[in-house]
Image 1 (spheres, rainbow, N blue to C red):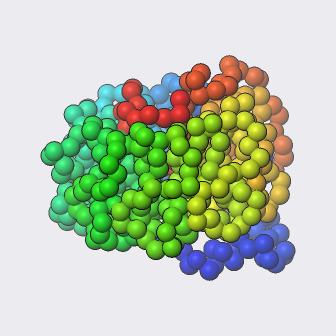
Image 2: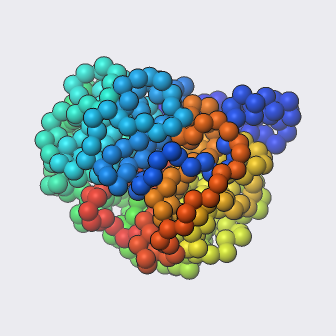
Length: 484
């Protein structure tokens, strides 16, 4: 997991008391885009964004209907796959990559699942996170060794990657300093995929978050492995685990799973949300701010929760009426409840006039798409990641002008946000210091695009994306219940 930056410096950077001259200088140097900027290509069906605090981080990739991929933003480690290490403000095609069916982006690397069941990765290869048998940085897509056409889904953590295979087994490669590969801690890293040692389990979802990994099994149990310093594995201890261990106390089949920076929540088939791990900002929705190594029910939620979405240190849940409730860290208003006090329990996001169809939690901001196709964002806005002209934090949802089509999928990075629309366009907004918006530096409003087929409600097939990183699940038949 990336070491978090100094908390004080990050808070001061986003303090409303920041000196105006510093704010102006930041605007002149970084030139964030304050309205959604259309990416210079069409036919996008999936966008994945990676933020991160490391230098050289901040890029996005889009999967197109044709099976091609476009990437843009920071390219210091070749994570755009175009054969260079030049940052790009427009989407570029990874060299030789075709037939992609899913994409996942890590801190400084990218991976694609191909239609033949193979996996290709590119970018930084420190600790072997590309899985090609070397630690050589790759600026073009490189096959992951040993997958042999069996992968059905992929996920990326900060310094490791995993694949879910057609037989329900998992394999991971890259950093193993915390046991995140699940292979009984054999070595501090692996240059090639190693099997996740869970002989009595068959996974339907694997999700890599930071330096820990979790999965949902075919019996709807949750198993986790890797870093456990905040109790985020949910096994009742704070000891790292090099192989999958059951999350104890869920006592019901799991419908959905979401991972934050060091906490996790599971939605049961009974519509109840249970959370565990880091609780510094009450992101578990209960307790006294102490970390909890076992799941506890978020008591103040209404019955029949439909979905969950975790930001870095805050949590949100979609109610049966498709309203939104959030809790946890709130210093920048990322809970959308009209103030900036951390919330020990769920509170309603105010001002949402239509049912929620998708949610994405960033570091210090949150975005939703609504059933009328509109987008609302709130929270930190220092880099205009809320998509409006006001570089100040917003405590309640703010409307975004997505031209001419309905939003169907959101991906909130650390300091920028992207959306795909029903017209298969991609738009991004926020920090653009490395071109991570896929658009030249500018702040002018954009012309509208032609209207297309509308996606008015979850019942019409709008996809729901509620996780800031890609959870690995088969692309053909999603195995868990979602709001769709």
